[in-house]
Image 1 (cartoon, rainbow, N blue to C red):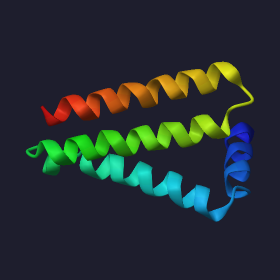
Image 2 (cartoon, rainbow, N blue to C red):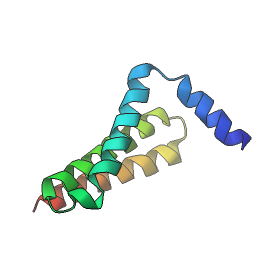
Image 3 (tube, rainbow, N blue to C red):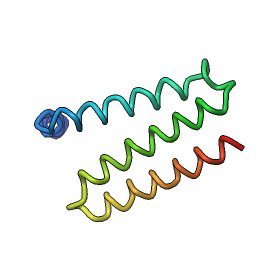
Length: 88
């Protein structure tokens, strides 16, 4: 529980633009991946693109931990691939 509180405190110390970017991309990814928007390929693609931006932003933040950053960047690249694939 202490580790979760510590991570939340670190997140709250970030600049406002970074917190908004993380919050908005996470929210867009969750909303547009819901079953209500599943009929349109554009919304599914947009959801995956928002997830890629989310993973990239967190990866940039975690650059000091190389393994974590590489994993997050790989997830971002995979999300971009899925985003492009969803349009076809």
